[in-house]
Structures are given as C-alpha cells and as structure tokens.
Length: 360
Image 1 (cartoon, rainbow, N blue to C red):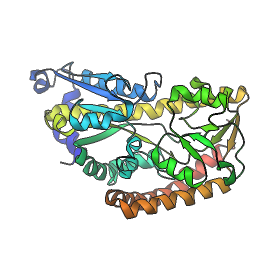
Image 2: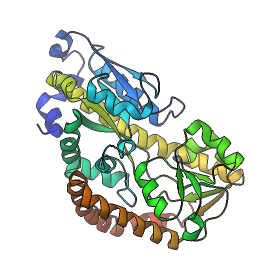
Image 3: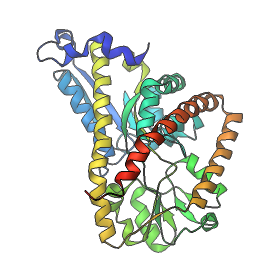
Image 4: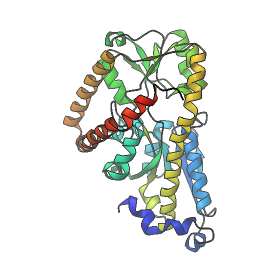
C-alpha cells in the first residue's frame, strides 16, 4: 500500500472532527510502547515523541495511547531497531543512521555527508521515492517508517584547537555520532571515538578528546562544551538535514484500523514539523549567548570541505560495490538532489545570501 494515501482514503478530516469518529470510539482501547534512542534532557529531539503521542491520544479520543520511554529505559538506545523488529515494543523514535553497522542503507533515511538539507529531504521523502524506497528496505526488518523530526543543518563540532587545513584532522580524537561519518573522518586522518553524551564534557576537559560534535547551539550550550573547547565550527557537512524517524512494527501497524493508521500518519507530520520549527526558534538565541561567552564561531576552510567531500565520495563508491540496497537508494537520492540544488541555487540561496548582509 502507498502509505502517503492513507489519510486521503481513511478520511482524516472526519477523524479530526469532534464527535465524528464513531469507528474509532467503538474500538477496544489500544496501548503501545515507544522506545526512544534519546535522553529526556534533549527536549527538542526527545520531545518530538511526546508531541506525536499526545496528538495520537487527542485524535483518537483517548482510545489510542502510546507511552514514551527514554533511551535506556526499556532497552539500550541503539537497540531500538531490534526491539521493533522482534515486536518487543510496537515502535521507536530514532535516527536511522545510528544503524549504519547493520546496513549502510539505514543512513540514507536520515543523513549522509553532503546530502540533503531538511527541506530537500522532505521533498524526496514526500514527493520523490524516498519514503517508498526506505520502507521497502525496512520491510526486511519488519518495520515501516514515518517522519519523526529534523534538526536542520547541524554545526560542525567543538575543537580544542583551530582547524586550518585537512592536515589538522590527522590524529585528532573526535567524538562522532555515526558509523558513516566515522569512516569519512578516518580517511581525513581523524580517530573517531564513540562516547556517550554525558561523558563528552569531561573527556574534552581532560584532553582525552580533541573535538566532539553534537547537534547545534541549543543542545550544545546545555552541555557546556564552550567551556572546554573554544572553537565552534560550521557547517556540519555530514548532517545537512538529518531526518529522525518513527519506526513501527509492521504487524502492529497492519493491525490498526484505517482511522488509526491515518491518525498515526497525521500525528507523525505534526511531530516532524514541530521539531524543526523548535530548533529554528531556539538556536539563534543560544548561538548569540555562546558568542557572548567568547566562543569562537568559525567556518570550515574551503580546503577542508573539499577534502571531506572527496573522502565521502570514496566511501559512497565503496558502499555501491558491496551493498545493493545502498546502491539502489543512493542513486535515486542523488538524482533528486541534483534538481534540488539547482532550484535552491536560483531562489532560496540568493535570497538568503542577500538577507544575511542586510540590517533589519
């Protein structure tokens, strides 16, 4: 079934209308559990799951309730795919690229170096082949996916020393969030480190880490990285617009009525839109405060971006040769991205560049 047509065929307008959903109210109450990969302290990312579940409850008249469990409560944060696949929980809220080790194709549902920005990913997922291709891939894991948020373009991380050229990455011990970016960084000479968020500050302070990437100003400020690593680089070229997904066990989803399937999809769009809007609202103030606290906000030199781009293309070419799912989805993604870049260059790009130089 084309999941994008669920709302149209189920009549979501009737579901949303007060007192106009007798089929939903007649059903036995549904109770699901959602396992998040995120801690409660990340109110922006973790909070999207709350937005989703509250919307589901409201639209179902309280007949469909989903409890949200932070990373580690029901299972380790990076085990949620296994939990959904096995039916231990009905659903999860996570970043697909966390599971690159299972298959490189997972990353294509979220973010890859020099991939889509947030709006381009939305376009591919909703009106290109993105969601269709990803759900074909996820079906091997007994999973169907829905949009669950986006952070927008992230920052490039915190560094104890300046990065003036690609050579400065050699031997750099850096906390990174995913396997794909780790592979790329290794080609630049860096030494990727996998360290839980709660331990990053101390590692930077002691010098056991030279650098760390997290998300962006709002989340990073709360962790205090600016106190132990003065250089804050941009952009996070490995996460131009990382998608966060809601993963649902196929059997559990197929067992829902048409009305409840429509509710799930509508609620997912609410959570998805809310997360990006929240980041866009909160990041400017946080960045201003970080600059006021003497953080040195710097752009990666062009030589660094070019070296990173070349290294990324090498990794992608290798994935093409060894992973058929990656090759199929990646090819479609790049065709779509080329047209997106062309469009953004003519309109959005020039507009944003002009406005960034004006005083308003």
